[in-house]
Amino acid sequence: MKASLAVPPPRVLLFLLGLLLAFCGLVYFLSSQASDTNVTSVLDLIFWGGLIWLARRVEVRLPFNASMSHAFVVNIAAVTFFPLWLAPVLVFVLGFNKDFGRPEYPWYKDLFNRTQSALATGMAAWVWWLVQQASLNPDLGQVVGVLAASVVYFLINVSTVTYVIHLSSGASIRKIWFENYSWLWVSYLVQAPVGLLLAKAYQTPLIGGWGGFTVLFMMLLLYFSRYYWDEKVKLEESFDETIELLVSTIDAKDPFTRLHSERVAAIAASIAQRMGFDEHDVKRITYAARIHDIGKVAIPDSILLKPGKLSEDEFTLIKSHASKGLEVLQPMRQRLSKDVQGVIMHHHERWDGAGYPGKLKGEAIPLWARIVSLADAYEAMTAGRAYSRAKTPQEALNEIIMLAGKQFDPQIVKLFEALWLEDPIWKDREEFLRRYTSPAHLSGLSSPSRSGPASATLHTSS
Image (cartoon, rainbow, N blue to C red; front, side, top):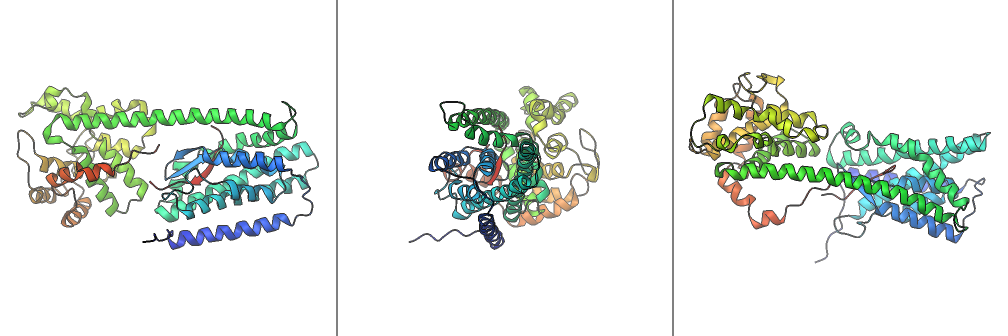
């Protein structure tokens, strides 16, 4: 049976078609500029086409399934070197992603990435040409022109990617901007002259009588910076994996807390989705729920696993795990949002102000912490402890309803009750453990994806 052609959501498809029409119109307009006298040889086309092809295939992942590459530098160099219309055409034809042709990289993502990058290149070429026409000082005109072209390229490249992510994921434009690109504009402007330098180096051979050698040397330096960035990202991923391992170790110590964090995360994610959180925030609150008890690594096992009732001093030490969590994560705190830190610190606060460590009350408790607090309590009630039997799901629900307005946010309790009645996988603990550890579930798990100026693209969905 023949597989059906993948089609994006209608509004994404309309946006893509609009970009494609705009690109075609722009190429026609640029080709009509009679003053365009740049001359191109076959060697020029092969060399710069190869650089465009290579630049798009080497990239660094960003949040929201986006990525960045060195394509910006190469595209700007092409803008200053080729006839106005040719640079965007080369980018459109050769700027395909390394995942091109794979089932997980559908045609419309490839077409979008090519089109938006080529459109940004074409507009940059037009602005470059306008500045050259208006400038009385050719040298100054080239510097101003490449900066102006870079600004235009940045605005079109990033705004189109941001908007299509907004259309497909529902995340706010502001959030996408700050998560992915708020820091990139400085990189674009500071390193924009590199594109001009590449073009000038090609036109003024310094090694072996051919400018391509100089360009390749400069690109080598750029890719070295990209390698450094990749190593930095890998180091941060290793830190995340270490944290996950510590959390799993805590859960594995006690049979009553087996997969505790995973189930708390599943409950919190369901509540967040029902509350209308976008995809990215659901992922972040899931992560926060996974690591909410990380501070317990600083609590002695003799106390943490004590089968009987805790003394007052022991309970005080147990309560310190909330603040100790942030101490454990101190090396990576700058990478944790305030919302995630709020979950770690305040998931034991109570709506009536009788919780710990800050005795916060009502809406003064961070929203994410209120969600995880309820998820944590339900999981603990239905798991039981050595000194108290596990409650049935119905008993746990009844207790949570009874504690609405006292321990828990009453609005979140209402949402939780509605979710509970829908029979989610996390409702029954034994069922959750059975399905979570089943071979089918494990085979479906995927590991998380985790320099110079960058060109943004919409990446493969995970």
